[in-house]
Length: 114
Image (cartoon, rainbow, N blue to C red; front, side):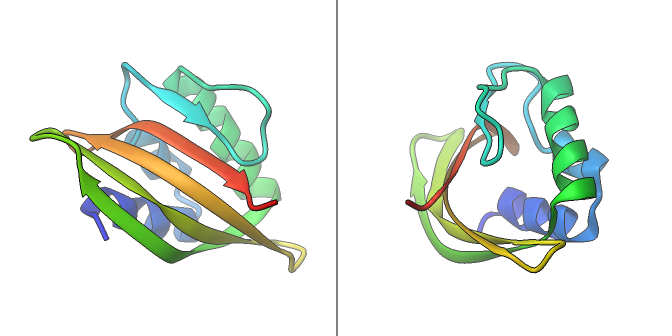
């Protein structure tokens, strides 16, 4: 697993919203979140999303599967499946993709598995 994804998981589990948000790029950002129907382009909106997600809904994430593909010298594509555990005991089975550039997330897509 990549360093950035390890940090993302660790900070989701710890509820450390600031450190989660710090992993996202300030520029060239696209984020299609699991529990939101809007595409996010700004880091402030990433913060708002995770504030709501981690204080009201999710308290854990487990990586189930990962494919790591180097796109070029600066970018890596990570995709696979993860499960979110909710505060009320539900499990959200999701698929994801991240594009990491220079240790920052520039693209993140997450959706529940149909």
